[in-house]
Length: 243
Ligand code: NDP
Image (tube, rainbow, N blue to C red):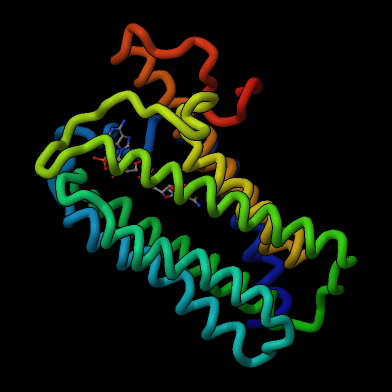
C-alpha cells in the first residue's frame, strides 16, 4: 500500500462513518430485531459472523507482515478477532435470526479495507510510538472494553433457552445503566486500541465504531421502551447517565 492510498483510505472510512451515522439514525441496519420482513436473502447467523469477521484479521496480517515493527498491535487485533470470528459465532444461540446477505457483503467490504489500513499502519515506521502513559491507558481501556462486551454478550445469550427466538429484558452487569453495554464495551475497546496505535486508521476505526453503534443503541433502546412498559427509566441507551 502507498501512503497516498492509506491517506485516502482512512479519510474515506471517516466519511463512511459520518454517512452511516446519519442513515442509521433514521433507518436501523436490517439485522437482528430490526430485520425487515421482505429481506429474503440471508445465511445462518453463525456462518455470517464467522465469514465477515475473519476477513479483518486476515487482511490485517497480510498488510502488517512486510513492516512488522510493533507486535502489541497485531496481538490486540487478533485477541479481539479470535473472539469475534471464532468464539462468538460458536457460542451464539442456534435460534439467532439469519443474517441478511446485504449486511454480510457490506461488512466484508468494510473489514477488508479496515483490516488492510490498520495492518499497514501498524507495520509502518511512519507513525511515532506514543508515550508509555498512552500505551498503558490504551491497553487497559482495550481490555476493560473487551471484558464488558464479552460479559454483556453472555448475559444476552442466557436470556434464551434452546429453540427460543424471542427477546427478554436484559438485567445485571452494566445493563443496570445502559441498554447496550456490548456496544459500549466495543467502543471503549477500539478507543483504547487507537490510543496505543496512535495512527489515523486506528482513530478512523474508533470513530466508525461509535458512528455505527450509537444509532443502533438508540434504536435498540427505543425498541425496549416500546416493548416493555416496565423498562427502567434510569437506563440510558449507550453511555451511562449521558445518552
Ligand atoms: P445485539 O445486541 O443486537 O445482539 C447480540 C445477540 O444477542 C444476538 O444473537 C441477538 O439475537 C441476541 N439478543 C439481543 N438482545 C436480546 C434480548 N433482549 N433477548 C434475547 N436475545 C437478545 O448485537 P449485534 O448483533 O448488533 O452485535 C453483536 C456484537 O458485534 C456486539 O458486541 C457489537 O459490539 C459488535 N459489533 C461491532 C460493530 C463495529 O462497528 N465495531 C458493528 C456491529 C456489531 P438476534 O440476532 O436474534 O437479534
